[in-house]
Length: 313
Image 1 (cartoon, rainbow, N blue to C red):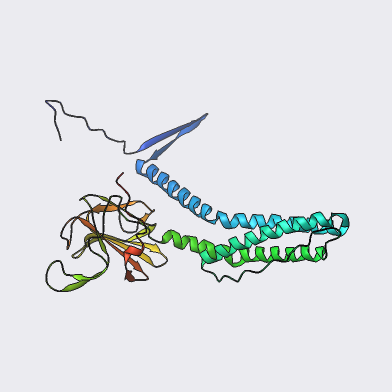
Image 2 (spheres, rainbow, N blue to C red; image 1 turned 30 degrees about the horizontal axis):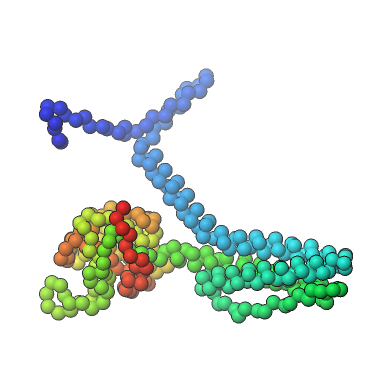
């Protein structure tokens, strides 16, 4: 303990438990005892739950918005179709409206094709929309045109509800589980790449299943994607190391740490600290060994380091 002269600094002790007293008229009071760690754990759980709920809500909002737009458009088509039967004089206006609706449908279908590509579904060839005759007199076949519009809208609704929305949700979860960017927030470089390299500790060559990122001793290491800690301990090669399982076949490993900041079984969010750069195990100096595994096979992490490391904050 540090001393300044003869003065001894007082230690601030946090209460081990909090007492909550609720008084009731004509009845004995209620007394509750709550530990500070329980309150902190509850707040953390609420924060994680709220963050994950907001993430998946915002990710699926695009598909839900399209479904609502298509549903509203379907009701509009039916109303216009009934008006054609009742009042022939409105056929020209209805035909012009149908032309605008066809244009909107083309844009919706283009967006749905983009969603199908993102979800990994088969994309059909673009279909040419029928033209809408607009001019003096009654447009030919306007009732048939609205029937065709209604059929196209029904097909869009079935496509969105049937396979696009579930597949898109799976694709968004897979994208969220993909490790992206550097696990460091300081300027670094790849000192030793993925693949066969000369043995830095002796003769011959060896296979290096990751990349080495030099950084100052004690630099925080961050999770590049949400995941669960499946290993956290010591090995003769990596020293102190952590391995994360991100789901969808993705796993990452962080070696030569000076200190581990997580425990086995813990679930981490993207950007949460895993540990700190060190030189433990089979190492020649402070750096982070970073490996990426896809379905159990080590792959070159450079394809996941899409952007340079963030500058120091």
